[in-house]
Image (cartoon, rainbow, N blue to C red):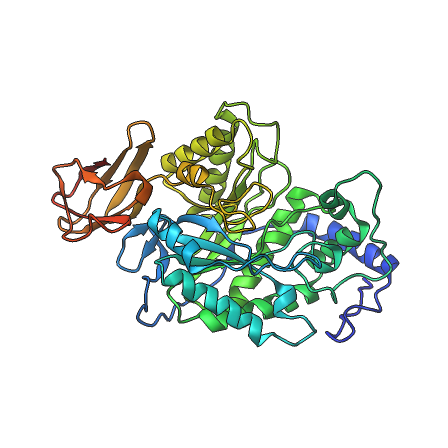
Length: 479
């Protein structure tokens, strides 16, 4: 089969023949349809030094956990202040005041979209100043007891097409970047022949993927000894077009993730590997089992927000989306974590949508990162001027069990009663439970006789630490 010649970094793919590229893509697609799809296996051997700051996280017993066996739920926000989108300037930076508010409200994670385009602005040149900015943001979050999840963010392939992700020097030449009249800018990018040709080439041939994992490895090497980083979200919102979805996921996406885990674990075997299902409307992802240490499955939940029919107040479509995602995680297998969910909060039913989503996350004992912290278009808690929408923040700030020994089997928070209930079983008496409790709810009060409040923690904003008196305990905390 005649393939496009692998470009050097300096050439940036400038001698591709579009006809040969399309022919090779078609032949490659026919080939992968007929290949068997056994489970994938990647051996990873962590070499974690003693934690500095927050505890190391791993996967134990199907849950995100500390090395000591405490299960951990990560809930917080996305913050896109390091993300390059097209030629737009970067948003304003996350501040210490922002991080303090998150900490006071009981949140414990920030998902940080980062840019391949800023990391490698020229072929083979990795920006030390950009790496320093990533390091500074992780340090800022850690100083407020917030884990970081680093997300190599991609949308519409790259900045050369007005999206985010790949640097502008990666493209398939000769394919027009058409702009059709009457279409919004996002759909111009989604439907662009140039964008889809670049995506097809990226997924069907290994040379651009190799460059991608090389860039990821630069970041991973810098953080391999940093326990304040929870993990790496390897690829944002992969979508199959122009490749059929089932073929894409089974024969391209999961081998791609296996390749990435191998590449990154050579320099950093110590962090969670967060793997996203494909984003193709509301269709499910075809799961191919991938056996590796510390793998977490993630999807983005936007049913009734930007996917499907608009939200009408019924939680049924949201619940269906949750069930499908949790089912896919079990097939992988790995714990489930939501990398993004959100809705413009000025809509009539936005509060109800958010409350239903958080209630579902309680039912599934799952964490999430809200999209997002700052946004001028109504998605964020903070606007472009740094003003906080306190009413919206209160909607999102709901108590949950941040860290638990034994088996956390159920969790429920009633906003009306301001009451959190959680059932913990098979715990060692005397072990600690950390409850995230928003400052705006006032001082928490323990209502269970099977636990006691740890000395000095009742007045710490955002956190209540309990000690269990029995192996099984229905923890109840209210105001």
